[in-house]
Length: 327
Length: 193
Image (tube, each protein chain N blue to C red):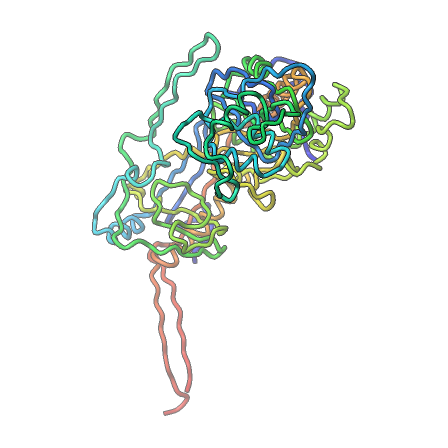
């Protein structure tokens, strides 16, 4: 590991060279916050939250937020019998009260017993299992990922406090996207030392914060997490213009630092996991910002121009080849 | 002999310069009149606007107004050249060819990124890297100042050196294949009649 020595720059207030910061939060929400910037909860197959039993208090969750969800898709999810998917359906599967929907289908598209959505909707409204009508035994939780808007550095903490999920575990990542006004700043961070510096100084931060040794951050910092490997494919990644889900091979995005320039115009730090305490998460995001600004300070130098020239003795010089064969 | 050096006496046939700038990659292309004449002949003198084919090569850009707290950084217009980019319009496109380092060279992607993987028509396999050298079709590359344009892209220093090496090989191959005069003499002889 070869990283920049940035200690002295972390102790002083540096000029902020980051234009905007965007944070992706993964986890489970008992209630979704009121989104101001058009954010929405997206499904994320890597996030898995175990069902949470209902306590004695009645649920205050509104099963019908102002979102639409395809009913057939909801039932397919429901019928998969996967606890996580079942939860997704119960909480995230929002049924439109649409009288034109005459029937429900199973995951193969075959009609199932209910000819009308009315009983289904009534059960759902009552907080019961929508198909059987039996009382739910689990809390309704929205599971997935919320991608925050690009915000100024000093506004990130407020957004995170407002939107942070109530339930997180080791399947949940906290991804930090940073963008720059100057492409040159982005380019100067396309060195392996930047990733190594992020890892080295987040390790130092985690030790100072006395984060428990069982916390998922340690697996991510030591390169043991499949979703943030310590590999470097800056130029390959920067040229990709769409999301790829292949975990292996040059250019895959599952590296500690993902150069998602072609897709988002950002550098994505994938090292952080979600923390149960939002204040720790805010500190971690601010640390990523500080380390990034410090790396730019260290990496500032005059740019060189590279040239590729073809030089000839004369443009009229000729390729001559004589072939003589004797018979 | 074609050499990949620039400090030797002789004539520069093609020179491509790459520079990382605050807004992206600045590309400057200069060539011997023989190269531009070659393209002009192939096109029959017809030219096409680069921006009508691809929008990645910029000659000007405007930085939007930015608000940081109460501070407002006004929008700013930067101009590299007044004239829009034009290129010789080839009626019969060049088939992609391989340079001696194995990179596919494409001369038919005006205004597109310099590096890509695979080709739209499937003639180049998905993971093979392709270098877009269409910039040697630009009108004006034989002028003393050459032609300059900006790509809104980012490169690591190593990535840019690799790109420079690919362009070098591609230029060499192009000169050898299309520009240089070639004379083959084939003689059949006998020891005695």
